[in-house]
Length: 281
Image (cartoon, one colour):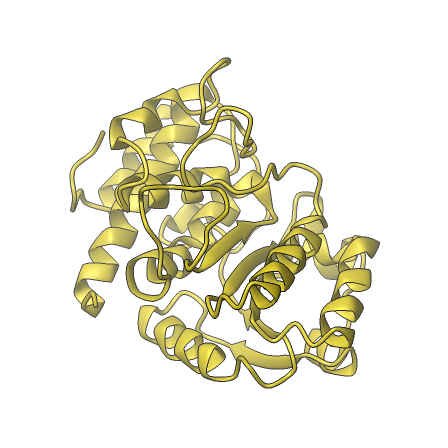
C-alpha cells in the first residue's frame, strides 16, 4: 500500500499532467479533473484490485467506470502512471486519430477504459450491468463509478438508482464529485439538486459524506469504509465534497475553468504550484 506522501506526490504529478495536456491543445476540462485527482489517485494506487494486462471482461478484478467522461485528462494521467499505457502517450491528448480523445472511447482499445463516456448519465447503468454480471458469475470483486453532481440532473441516473437498490446491487460503490459547480454556473443556479444524501437514502442506498474530498487520508478512510459496507443488500454512495480546480489557485472557487485551457503564463503558474515529482512526459 502507498504511503500518504507517495499518494500526494502522485497527485501533484497528475495535476501537472492535466494542465499541460489541456494547455497543449488549448482544449479540455481542467477544473473537474483537478478536483478529482486525489480521489482517482487513491482509487488506483491504494484501493482497486486490477491488472495492467487489461482485458475488457475484468474477471476477478475490481472495475471502474468514469461516467463524467469530460474529465478525461485525470483518468488518462492516472491510468498511464499506474502502468496501463506509456506515460509519453499523454502528449497525444485530443489529437485526431489518437487513443486519447476528449472523451474516453473504447473503439481504439485504450487499456483501462471500459466504456465510452460522452453523454452524461449513462455510467451508472453500465456499471450496474457489470455488477450484476459479477454476482451471476460468482465473482466477488467490486464495481466503482464516478459521476459529476451536474450529471445527476439527468433522468437516467435516477432510474438506475432505483434499479440498483431494488435489485440489491450491493457490490457497487458510486462516488459523486460534489463540487456544486458545472459548466454554466453553480448547480443551485442551473438546476438545484436538493438534499442529495436524503435523496440517495430515500432510493435505498447507503450514503457516506466526505467533507474533505481533496484530502488523501479522508478519501482512503471513506473508501475503506464504503468497501466494508458492501454485501449488505444495498449499493453504496460516496458524496465527495471537492473543490473544482483544486491545487491551482486561480482555478479554484469558480466554475470558469470547467472547460477552458490555461494560457502560457497561467500554465507556468500552475506548474510552479505543483513541482514535478514523478517526471513529466
